[in-house]
Length: 162
Ligand SMILES: NC(=O)c1ccc[n+]([C@@H]2O[C@H](COP(=O)([O-])OP(=O)(O)OC[C@H]3O[C@@H](n4cnc5c(N)ncnc54)[C@H](OP(=O)(O)O)[C@@H]3O)[C@@H](O)[C@H]2O)c1
Image (cartoon, rainbow, N blue to C red; front, top):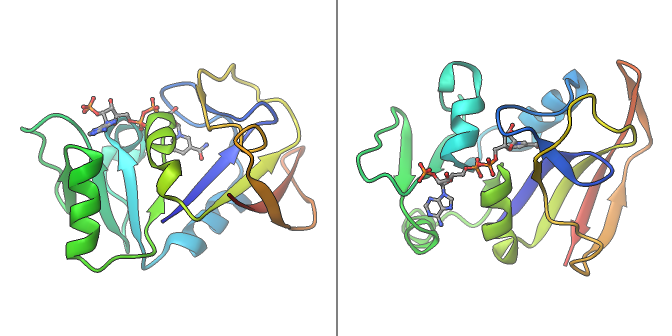
């Protein structure tokens, strides 16, 4: 399992409703990385997507404790245990964890790497949802792209491993 996230310098990732930055280059990178793969997300992140709909061209798995929740075009799992059983049944070893804060926190122990788009500037919106601080967690930076400039923002595509 791998996590993929765009984070502010303080590891902020959202305000509870949406993301902190609008970066077309990062959305393109996210699409390229996850296309054709399985993506795992929390129910709140699903609701934050356009139209509250699943991501096309990917196998979508939603985590929710709501046993009545049905999501067209997606599997719904009601616990981490149920998710792990589903991944095993599907023989899926390279799924992407795509958020949000609660789901990253719970699934990071199962991730062998994290793709983090690190934005240098503080976000225009105050974050209330955070990715775990990977330095504090003892993870190591294993790859870092050249800085990208867009919409007045500077960001790098990085990879971290435990
Ligand atoms: N910057 C980025 O890359 C990025 C990526 C994704 C999301 N985000 C942002 O993150 C924010 C959303 O994150 P969030 O932490 O509020 O919510 P979230 O992690 O997307 O979803 C939380 C929900 O997941 C379900 N859940 C959590 N643990 C579970 C478990 N063990 N078993 C079953 N279901 C479980 C629950 O759904 P129920 O309430 O239905 O039970 C819970 O309310 C938004 O602002 C979004 O824009 C940012």
